Length: 154
Image 1 (cartoon, one colour):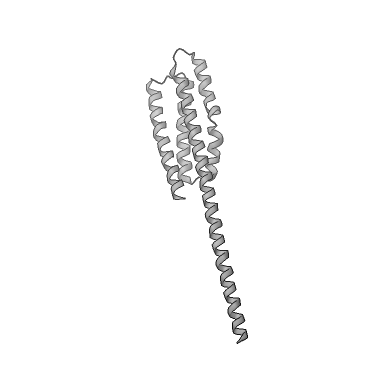
Image 2 (cartoon, helix red, strand yellow):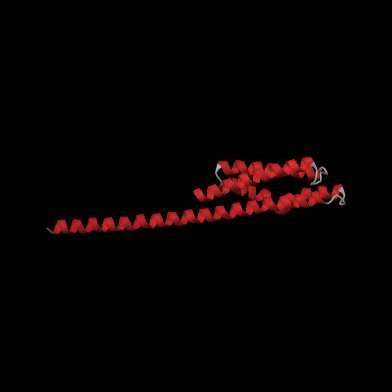
């Protein structure tokens, strides 16, 4: 009888230790996922802000026809430096699923096309600028939706 009691106690202890370790592992995993999600949310928010800031800088560069074209072109060229869109774009590429990276590339390229148009002297009231702005708006909306979906799904 002593052996069976001892074996029962050992088995009970093993089950208890296993349950505790399993519970701790699940808690750690949940904490890690929450941390990863918060980090992703922060990176996404910073990237969207950088794109928006860059877009706003381009808008300002294209608005004032009394400013010489050279100055407007310089402001447009500086817009990507001010916003830090390049740096954050690479961070998004590292952490995002392919659908977000694709939408990010589309939005970034739409903004670059708009930048080149403004550097060429186009004003915000001209048809080429308006068409590029509408394409930018649409691509930014897609990017935002995919980022939201990714954060909610993960």
